[in-house]
Image (cartoon, rainbow, N blue to C red; front, top):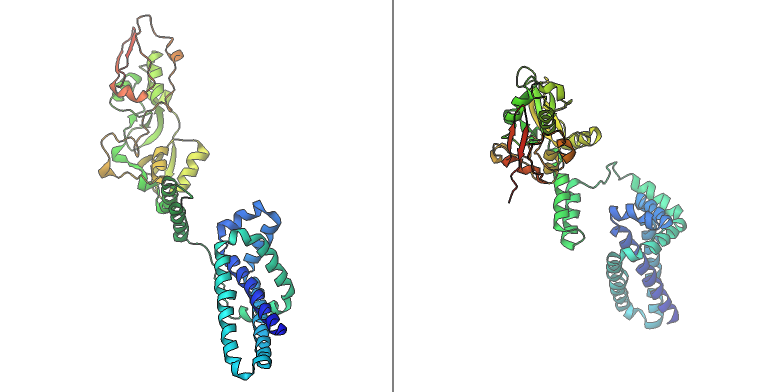
Length: 384
């Protein structure tokens, strides 16, 4: 009876451990595998090796598991015949099968799949030990399985990444806003510059030969901080001018000078450039506005940093949805960040100058300006 129990426990216990190890190894996710070495460097290196050679690791586990089940079942069967006779051999075999099924397969694999994060460190060391013990047999099995393998790599697809983020959102690991932003970033891969730009028909631009005084009148009905300048034909954009430079030139009494004397260089991008390549350009060049051209170097539109940010967050404006003075996906709107007007800039005003400072530069839409050759009067209407 003692040998029967020994064989039974030998088969059940070893098979139990092997099933736990197998379930733990299969439950490890790619993101966890990348971050785990930072927490446990040595254990992480072992885990990364086992996942990179998962056929060898699983082969070692299966070899030990099969050995334990075969030897244990044979030993239990032989001892059962001696003790109970051949009449009970079928009953013993049935009990052994049920025990292996539930105690050595279902229960341990459930435990391994549920608590794999807690078991991953000891499991990694245990699997490595089994691998070293069964190395010759694993090598033979690797030769055999190599005949039936293809060279395809099992990489995570974009759809799987999106599915992982949705699961994270449902489980509460990330909130809804974070999930929406991440999903939008991945889904916007197919977008190009021409999908988010403002078409040339909707561009507000000025002639570079226009005087500061004329430009000041022209920009009153628009609230753009960066205004493209064209040379000759309207489609020939050559530079841009900042709104604050026009205002400053008026204050400096340079209203007769042409805009080109105050212009800044403008950068050009191809209309087929991808959204993320465009974002890299904005970051590297530290620009906020690009002129979009086609292969023939013809103007097709302009694109701003606001457009890129809106698109990456999933807010893409189309012409049918835009008003005549749409801020995003058109020229960059005037705001308190891109127009830095301080009180020192107005020290040259005459004694009769009357102005009120406002922190909301967007309120300049309601601003009344009276500029003449003798004095400058600013009356800024505050928003409610």
